[in-house]
Amino acid sequence: MLQNFPNTFISIAIQTAVYPTTWGNQRYSFYGITGVPTAEFDGMIECRGAYSTVSQQYSWYLGAYNSCMAVPTDVAIEMETFKVAADRIRVKAKISIEATGVGKSMRVHFVQLLDRWPFGYTWTRDGVKQGQDMGVIALNAGQSTTLTYDFTLDADSLAHPGDVKVVAFAQDPLSAKPAQVFNGNFLNGPFGFRKGDLNCDGNVDFGDINPFVLALTNAAGYAAQFPNCDINNGDIDGNGFVDFGDINPFVRLLTQP
Image 1 (cartoon, rainbow, N blue to C red):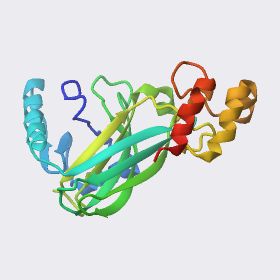
Image 2 (cartoon, rainbow, N blue to C red):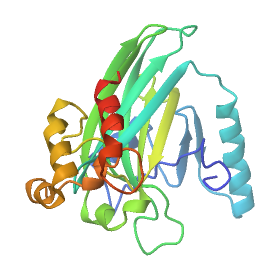
Image 3 (cartoon, rainbow, N blue to C red):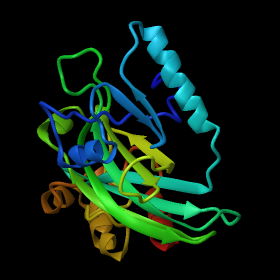
Image 4 (cartoon, one colour):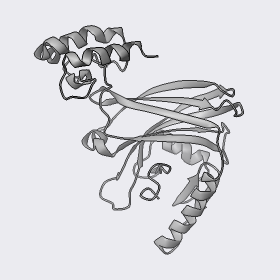
């Protein structure tokens, strides 16, 4: 599924025994899982158990996936993820309801995954490292809100930055399944610092002006003052250098809404 639908399918593999997480245990209870493997598609379709062949299992899952994809949604989720420290990433998700949609309440979750973890198995994908219940939001048609959360990465994730994934999804705020997942989005690592964020506080604002000038005029001084930042955050035009060609693009970052 991950190979055939890389842009529209993401798995969230909850480990319940050897590698439990607080968020994973909460979701395990929410779905009332009584045995493994159990797959929940969009909070509405349960596939419990396993067939004897991979092809049978895939056909079962494919049918559930196609049923979910046939359900229209008026919820959109735009995501941005970037470093704010060597071991910390910031997740920002803008959740919107289309102007022609229907107002609703939604419970939003952020999840940090590590692909191919737990290690040592050929079949492990998208293992849950940590998650955060971001609470319930209520939006009317045409409205949006942005939620932000920082995940501190553990040693496994730091050692495999290309396998880190972040998921955001919005779900019907019920106390137990079935609960429709209205939409979700995900981003794949590795994640770098944000362009224009020269002081590495996660924002691009007036606080970055002096650090940008320092990076432009004194690279060694910048490295000494901001040892946990990447000077290439100042390479706004992407030519491989922090130079005068980055000044106008940097100003645009500061002034864009």
